Length: 564
Image (cartoon, rainbow, N blue to C red; front, top):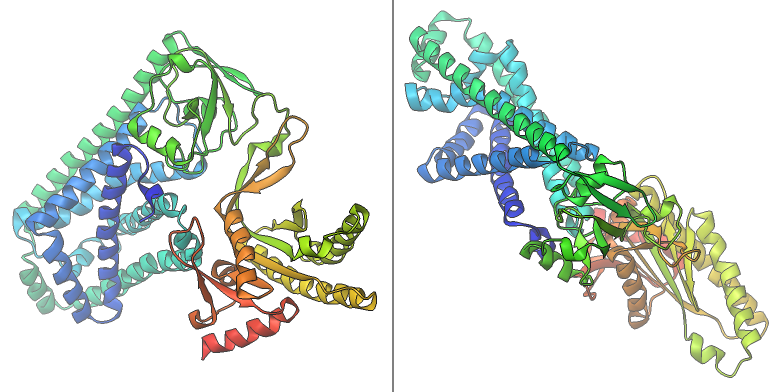
């Protein structure tokens, strides 16, 4: 597995593992509910397997420890935070996480506790009879949605750095919506069937006997346990808020420290909070693509003054910084806690001595990137005068750049006899379609250009094109007054390496599978080449295009093969 997924502190790793265990538990529960739509026997079979796992001693221990660890770490993070200002997605996930135990406690008491204490056979029929057409029924439906959304946000924040997650994201969204929807539909259908069955007194008596339905005293006991457990949950949440308020008050009473952002504001901050929390609480733009979990390194800063007063980085922070080759005075803003005046430069934000515009703060986007290179340029221009070389290049670019612009792309930079273009659109699918349109447009433009060269007695020009879609970071990078807007990231490197591979394969273009999928083109695996590119853990599937001007015909043929 990608080592980047496990960067961070031990607490972060425990939170990930416990979250995965709980997500598996919730998914199994929802799939069990959805199996009602197949048949009652299918539901019973899935439930039998599920109970065999979760109600075993090992299963109960693992799930219980995962729940306690996940809640303790999450609540501890809130209690120890110095500020509640955060990105909307983080606020949403934390809010949902706080709501879950308040709703979950009643469900646990009337199912697992009822089974353990009173010997109730807590089948779906028993649960439906209890909560259908009641307020508790609505709350349990809300619990399904809240728990699932909370878990999916966590999964996305953890796995979005991986190529396979980004490539499969449309499918993941569809499945993540489908599972709770089918579970709720299964719950509603089974509840209606059970409601009709319970109208028959004889059937109702048999059902209650099969469930070992609690008597009046049994329900009073469960209600008492539920009330006490709910109060305990409220008490824990209140304690978390009290700890947060006390720590914030104590921090405010202590003498604040000065934090100077190079080419940015100077702020006063409480001692002990992370630099990222300081940025957020003071409205200072600070990139943190992983949400401040110490994994992506995009919040890193260069400490220009005050390095000696900082505690050394933890083992996890040092390992993360080493993975990106950061200099000795680099730190992660989400991990460092200044206790003395400090001056920092944000690597992916407006930085010192570089008078930059707002765009230099950087932003993440999922875009298609195109690399193009003229083949055999050095041999072709050997012995020519500089004027002739520049004239040829300008004529070449005058011919092939307009199709890129027409498709909605812009040339990010020229590199001698090649260029890099980006297709900055509203959605990844639109960006992918624009890039594919540009490839075919370049093919037609090259054909016309070579016809002109032929009429002048010159040799035709050959090209190589690489196209890939993925996450990039856009921003202004460079010295003061000389910082053009550009983009960086693994996507850029992959597109460049695809372009290099066209030479060995003797094709004009290579378009990655991610780009094709985002553009809506189904291509069978047998029609793609598997490329082992430097920097990628797994082979990258790509479609080889012999002639770019025949791209649509090629896509049509491979599309027919995919459907066959």
